Image (cartoon, rainbow, N blue to C red; front, top):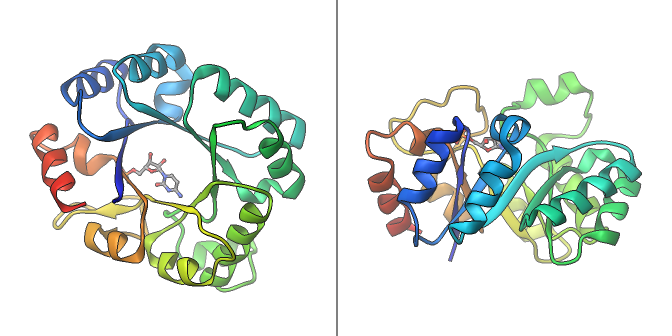
Length: 222
Ligand code: C5P
């Protein structure tokens, strides 16, 4: 069964209130730049103390030694999942895997906010599915546990990838939700039927009139 991960792209108080109000639900909480840069342990410790898994979404992209040090720090913090851009390159991925221990490493393929034109602009010459597949294979070959991709490419990856992997899918929208900065969006049903293992949702939950009710509705569909 797929898991739901809530992206805590809010201020500290809202994040803590939401985590507390969802105590006991089968969820993961994702901490990214917004909270981590100013509040790091105030939120990561809180998530762990409340009994949830911690998904640290720092999307590391640096030289091998710096990535390795980042992985060691994420372990010290008690993170369960950590994201690293696969385009950091083979040596950086390898350095991360060497020290990962039980931490699950997730490789970011192509951000869900990029469409075909954006991907060409960056200079990636393969088509979108080909590029995501290439990056996925690179990460899996180096021993990554999973990858982050759009639900749009996931069926293809699940069929073609050389080994099983944890598929993390952001860019998921419920009916009527605004797409905003995301471009390769899918519905919850599409993400699930493509084989998502972890569904990441932020604004659809954070901006709901009643976020707990919204989470309950989503959990019923998983
Ligand atoms: O609000 P929304 O549901 O669009 O939030 C998606 C979350 O997933 C954000 O925290 C964003 O940083 C993250 N993410 C993403 N695309 C990726 C990797 C992570 O949208 N490829």
